Image 1 (cartoon, helix red, strand yellow):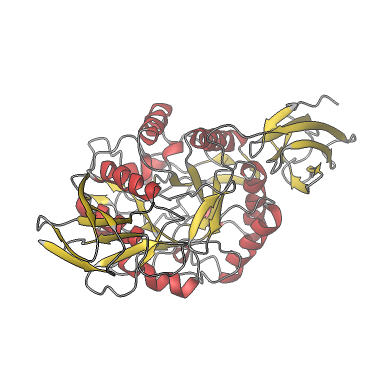
Image 2 (cartoon, helix red, strand yellow; image 1 turned 90 degrees about the vertical axis):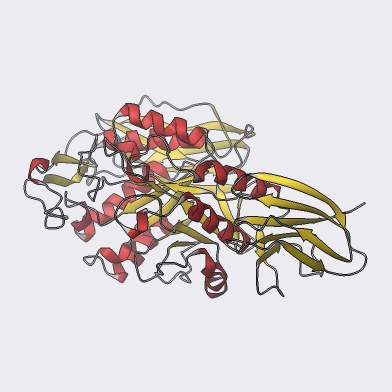
Length: 510
């Protein structure tokens, strides 16, 4: 048997074995292939997959440096294959998968803190090639280090174009029958769809994994939305056997990429054909088949999923209140004892829907509120466009005023000692935060006081008579940091009496 694989790969990189195998019958339903990887510190068995044209693949992500041996077995072939490779030290920028750290925060597996600044582009990877490349260039020059996008194509307002590929073999409906007025009528059941849900289209998944790899090289996490309700092709209405087959195929193809996160669904509660038992079954498949324990969550429209479920690693929240979002981070932290990621706090834009027309100032305010309260916010942009290209779904270029300010915030986040910020007790009239992870000694070594839409002209402080602080005034909108010297005892910080200001206090040591 001709078997292809590299002789070395970085720790936390994708090791791939390619082998020939059976073409007869249905390789997606009749054939099994799995690889077992052995190192002195770990033994893992993973599912392989059929990649079309008689080609089978097994992918693996080594978690340790050193020599691995492997065997590939199953009824894909009458022969058993095997070999060995060396896992070499990771290169700069390769910090491993993101994990939960200190209950409410994130860090890469090597311990480097991960400060999440996410965005949403639901089907950017299913747009024409030029637009995909434009999206990657925009991301390269942004502060975003996580992007949410779907495996399935999307059918919704401003999203009536056909995708560049489909996940199954078959024929789509005639999109010419669709109008703005009847798209709800055809949701999930437009006439003309002829799909074979037992046969995947490998090209669709190759395109996705290429983009996952592109994001990995940019240091961006790929938050994969595996199911969603915005559908005219019938993918949201498959039976249980087809759903489970799809889940296993997606995991087999994508799990070895260190930057993958699993989002079971976007707005799971808009899928009435799926029961709570279905979602729990999908979660069980992930927990069984993903040997790397990638981050896992599920996203709501209105009612929250029970984020206390043990398989959920973090909260992926859409605001439930018309006005409040980040203001409730503290409540959700206490309720679920997990990281709170506000993946949808409304989008900067000017479309008719209330979730898509907040200002850049309001988007940035919500990010700062979430950060200071110990959570993480998510960005999106929905400005009307002559060609109907809205970042929130198609990608392309950004037109709003928030992304530059979010880059500035990200700089502040990365300067934070420890894993992130947490609420500071004793302050009722300002969003007060202290660096997390340093215990609860008073006074703290590091504070940020964010004034949001309030406009004080000064602020008085008193902690004790001896602790000295380096004082800085931050204009979060103009993106400036003004040093105000070292203060102790009772001191006053003058402010310009305008919105979106903050004060940072850093304890002087040495």
